Length: 398
Image (tube, rainbow, N blue to C red; front, side, top):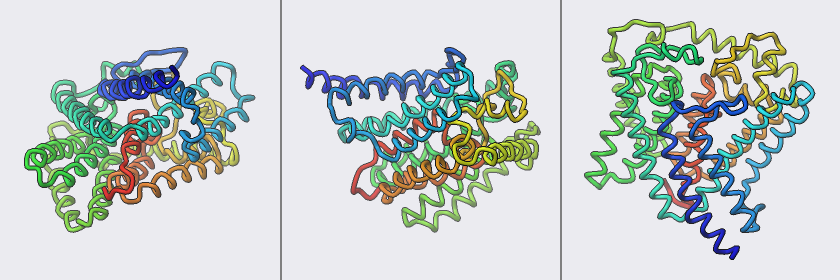
């Protein structure tokens, strides 16, 4: 009976929920439900269900220790420890909210273990679904860029205006740009693998060009940095470095043809307002770290630490709970030990995937972009990276 139950959960429940997660991905930030002071996205809800099913499967399978990836477990445990250490600075509501965000991170990380245990046939179905989902999001981005050119009507909900920039379902051009870069790298990986299949070659080439143009239309400088570093790394690992110069030349030429009908701060590549804001964000994070170097202020309790340090907090802002630099975020919330555990986790993941051009280039590009935008802890980027890592094919040059 127990055997049948766990097989149903794995082969029916978990597989169905991973597809549900991919469908939820398409809705991005558009559907958000406030629950006990926490903005829950449709993807969050879907991942939570998958996480719950996974826990039940592990319990029935009685192989919990083997299913847990030690570096993820170490980082998660230390994050919990830092939160417990700092409970004296938090009231009950703040403690619950901070813990829920830690639980969310663990739930997203579980996607890695869930997908890793699927058979290769279903992994191939996931790859096909990923291509479709990415294409839909890029298409929505073009529709948005033409017909919905700013977010002024959502300003009261804490969203920036982002005039005349592509932000697609993420309602933020920087995160949209980061996703587009990761999707482009995935397409290039598929293109190289299917180079002899004419139909697939044409399809992936078309999608790659459309995605490249979408990246440019975000006017996101962090995405541009990700693009250059990601593609350069990918081509070097694929032993095609000569293509780098051609792609950089194409990138530079295309920037001259970007729409210039509207001259705004957001579309100005030399804009300084956002740069100054990021520097201020980094200074505050470093100040908080200096005061709490060992244990930090508690994982995802950064918003409340900002209040203690005199920073103004907006109840509607979507940026006050974090800092722009992902690594400074880890440093400020978990201290030097937490940052070491986080870096160790990524080191182990990349070491185990040293033959994967896709995983290495995506990770390096993401690390670069996360110096400017907190992409490493953005739910959609987390889901994307964990599922890509879970899809890895052992002992295969990719």
